[in-house]
Amino acid sequence: MGRGGARGGRRGGRGGGVGGEDAALQQDLEEERRLQRDEAARKAAEERAKREEEERLRAAAEEREKKRKNILDVHARVTDAQQAFTAKQEQRAANLNAATTRLDINLKALDASIKRNEAQIKKMKMMSADKEKEVLKGIKEINMSKFISECVDALLEAKVKSTDVPAMVNVVSAMHQRYADAVKMLIPKLASVFTKLSMDAQTAESENDRKDRLARRRSTLRLLAELLVAGVYTDGSILITALRDLIEQESKAIFADARTMLFTIVSGFVKYAGEDMLQFPPQWRVDAEALLTSYRRRRERSAAAVAGGQGANAAGDDAVMAEAGEQEPEGLSQETGAAELGEAAAAAAAADAAELEKEDEEDSANDDVLEALEREIETFTPELTPAVMTAEQHAQMRSILVAFYDTTVKAVFAANKALHQQIKYNRQQMRQRGDLDESHVKATETAKADFEKAMANCRVLADALSLEVPEMPPEPPEETRFAGEIMMGGRLGDGQEEDFGNNIFEDQDTRSFYEGEIFLKVLFGHFVQEMY
Image (cartoon, rainbow, N blue to C red; front, side, top):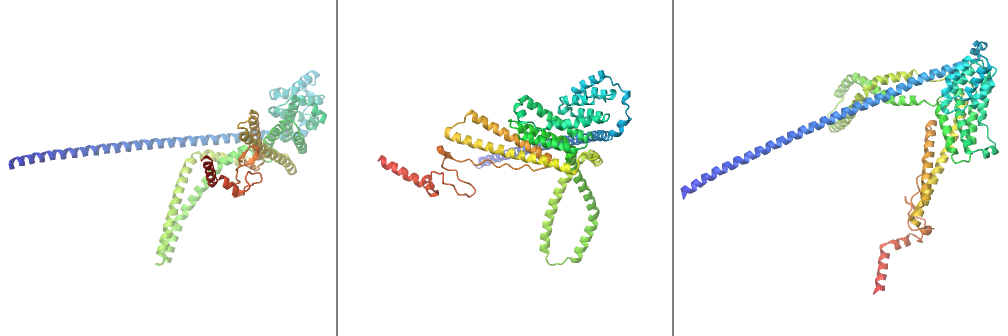
């Protein structure tokens, strides 16, 4: 028994050893798998980080390229504005000096035949941007001194659109530089387009006639403005009177879209006349200054950093010497706390500075084109000489436009009120009938469209005149009512007391009783007693 037990023990020992080796091997395998998983996770994280960095770099490159393209587009607009201004100033100078230069023109050497003049007059009656070259060629080649009146009437007869106005300005300028009487006849007749219509004429006016009249007034107002800028005539009061008469007359018109059409004319006038007559900054300058703002701040920060670095060492040495000479043993704990706070603030400032430096480094990729843009606008000051209008005339014109803006704001408030009233009416109909008629739905859509259009118009004028757009009153809170307009609920907010004048309850205590839990218990108990 002793020997058998010993053999059994040895076999058991060998079995235990094998089992231990298997467990260790299993642990090694699991550790190897864990390391492999960790390595795979690390590689996946690295790959993900690499992709994210590549995506960040790609997005940053696209953003830089987008910004660069935007800067170059603005720069191109500045160049175009310079060329346009040079041409405008040259034309203005030529027209203002026409009394002198026209003396050098030998009209007798030109063709004065009736046939050529009749052909020229016919072309003037059909004047448009497409006919500009033909008409200008005729003015240079034909002696029209005996047909000035006919030529002026022909130009007035032409159905000129707003897009044709620049061509018309060139033609009138050419006529003015050759014939002194041309403008003397033309300008009064253009101003007469804004003469007030009689009541009989307004009544007899058809829809098409009204549209034609407004289209003519729109193009004529622009033509008067452009001719004033071009120096064909110099009396700014003519344009101011035309603008004032137009607004006064059309504001009183009774047709449905009168205000919308008037606004189209006035807002268009502000856009094309604002720079030369109202001293508004041109849009290219606004856009250029917006681009240069961050560039100039970045340049200032760079200069400040350089200056700060030069003085840092000297300031640091002075601070160390002062601390060595003045530091005392007492109060070390307070100084340590202050130092810790200072270190935290310094760390936060350093982080912000690092982030800002990173942004500056990315944005500095376009500094070359920004620097060129800055030089361009610094040397370009588009101011016509002599001035188109006097300071007093500037003030008069702005006063007219601000008054028109005020009426536009009133129209916005009226449209807002009408929309709220329509919404309130819809709610009442939904509570009383459970649905809305199609007519009410359409009325709401119309009221909403009218308000949005009026609000958009208000913003256009506000931006042009540098005025603040007023805030609209919010929609009134919904009231809870039953049929017959008897108030059941609808508390007033913000601590205000409820009005029980038109309420089914006499006061707050009565309301609380009938709406509270006690009343329900009493009602339920009475119901049970009736049953049993």
